[in-house]
Length: 420
Image (cartoon, rainbow, N blue to C red; front, side, top):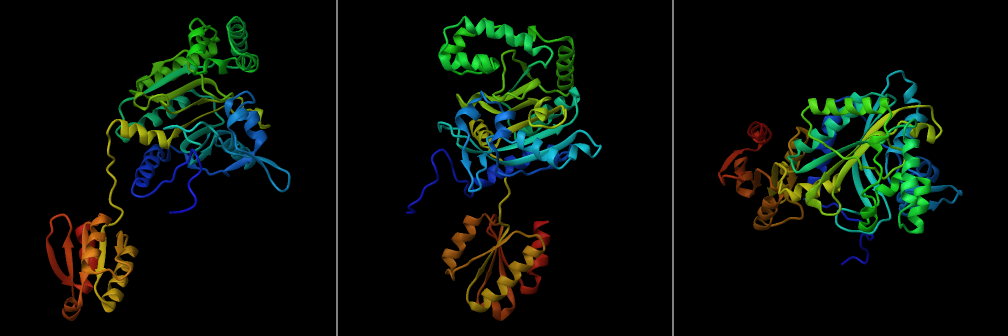
C-alpha cells in the first residue's frame, strides 16, 4: 500500500466511475457549444487581489477558504476558488471585448479549490463547468443561460431539481435596500462577526445557514420591494422569456448568492435529494465586476454547475447514464508470431477509429478472456498457432457468444462493418 493518500477533502477520479464525470461535463458543455460559446481555460492560480476585489473582502471564500501562497519572487497568489473573475480578467487582458462582437461568450471546465470542512458534496477540490456572456445587458442573455443549464440537466435525465430565481437590483436601488436591511439587522441578537459582516455587505447575512440566524431573519425586508422600475421591468422580462421556453422556476425573494459581484438576475439550481448541500449550480448577472478589477463597464452574466454534485444528483435519482464501452475490440494473441500480427491489426483498427485493446503481459487464454470480459469489448479476436497456419483469426461476439473464423487480412473491414 502507498505511503501517500489524497489530501483531506479531495478525491481521485478513477475508471470506470470517471467516465460518468466525463459524460456529465460533456452534457453540460454540449448546449453551450451549440449556442456560440467558445472554450476558455485560465491558470489554476491568480493574483490574490483579483478574488479579493471581485469575489468580495467580506465573503467566506476570501476571508476563510482561499489557498493563498507567496512565490519565490514575492507574488501573493491564490488557487482559484471560482472562475468568473479569472475568465473576465483573461477577456480583458486579451482585449476580446474590443473585437467588436459583444457579448464575448465563453465556457470553461476545470477545478476550483476552497479550504472548507469536508463533507459529502462539499470538497476542497471540486470540478465545475461554467459559462459567461460578457459585455451585454440584455434579459434575453440571462434567459438564454438559464435555459441552457436547464437543457443540460434534462439531457442527463435529471428531473428532481428546482430553479430558484431572484433579482438583486442594481447600483440605483440596492443602496436603499442595503440601508433598510442594515437597520433591521442592527436590531437583532447577532454575534460580533455577523454584525461586522452586516456593515460591510448586509446581503451576505441573508445567506447565513445557521438556524438561529435564519429564525431572526423571518421579517427581514425583501429586496423585491425596493427594486427600481428598470430592475423590475428587466426581471419581469427574464421571467417571461424562460417561462415561454417551458422552463419551470420558483421566485425566491431571499435568494442571495455567496459572491459580492452579483447584480439583478440571480439564480440557483437545487436538488432536494442531496441533503444540506442541495445547490448543484447557480449564477447571475455581474454588471460591475469589470470595473471592480480595473476594466471598463462590461455588463455580464454567467453560471457554474458543479460536476461532483451533478453526479450525486444522478445517483440520488437512480439514473444510470448510457456510457458506451471504452473498448469495442479486444485482441488475444497466443504466441509470439500471433502477438506481432494482432498488435499490428489493433494499431490499424485504432487508426480507423475503432476502439481496440490488447492482451499485454503474455497472459494465457483463460486470463486473457477474463480481461476481455472486463474490458466491455463487443468483439474479441483470438489468434493461436493453428489459426496462424490457416491464415485466420477467431472472432467472438461477446454478447451472443457466437464465434467464427475470418481471414487475418479481413479483420479491419469485417469489424468496421459489424460496428457500423
